[in-house]
Amino acid sequence: MESLPIILVHQGNSSYLEVCLRQARQTNPHSRIVWLHGEKDHPLDFVDCFSFHEPELFQDVAFFSSIYQRLSSSNSLESECFCIQRWLIVRNFMRREKITRALAIDSDVLIFCDVTQEAERFRPYAMTFAHWNATQNLIHCNFIQDISALEAFADYSLEVYQNSELLERLKQTSRKGKNRYRVSDMSLFYDWSTHSDYPFCFFEDFYPDGIFFDSCIDFVQDFKAIRYLPGFLRPFKKIVWKEGLPHATLKNSTLKGGLQAPMKIIHYHGGLKFLMPFHFQRRSPHVEIFKQLLLQKWRKLPAKLRRIWNRNADG
Image 1 (cartoon, helix red, strand yellow):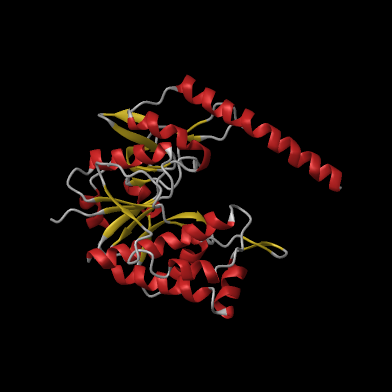
Image 2 (cartoon, one colour; image 1 turned 90 degrees about the horizontal axis):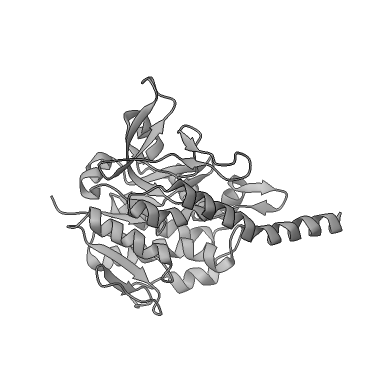
């Protein structure tokens, strides 16, 4: 069986990026691992590195910037735009290299499985998603099983910002309030997938079978969780290490004590990226983690107080 390539698009050489790539290399020694980076980044010698500014890889990327409309206040314009552009870059790379199937991951993901073997599980599907909410699909670990599906999504992404009807449909689906929207790459994937004939699956549908491709480590509703200071510090899934693999426990199970199974990947959403080096080392040191969470709260306190002050002043 030909090993499945692993592709990551990331600007900058963040501290957690190398951890992500080293974990992918460690667990998938036979897979081609590709980092598509900005031209000023520093390539790593244990993965294939390409600047996405190469003409073949940058096709349609600059044009997308010219038509993009920011319809979200969650991140900067550049960040929101690049989250969509990266899928054009992945498409361009797969085109150039004549790759028909691949796993595309975010840089805040750790892989704990043989992705070539796991990809066989998803053969009937064009792509894999996880749930963020009712109108947004997480695509942090996307098994692209059909290159034509990625081509179709790229075409849709270029069309939606040039077609007023498509854009209005997307805005209405992503409405957060009066004249407020949350249009992101996640909402684009949701809108496109619900109007597409391609078959898709969600990782959460496999949880009852004990197959845990994590959506977000801080999505704890159905799992046993670590709650250091409930209501103050954000909880996250309780990880138990067995034979070098992370295990999580699904509470809503017919099995006594819940269903505990190995996690195939873990997604370290937002401020929990600091957990990645610990878990790369197969550690979950409670005292160090607790200190890090408190430190994050302390650092965010001035900005939070300013927001409260400004709201009171406006009121």
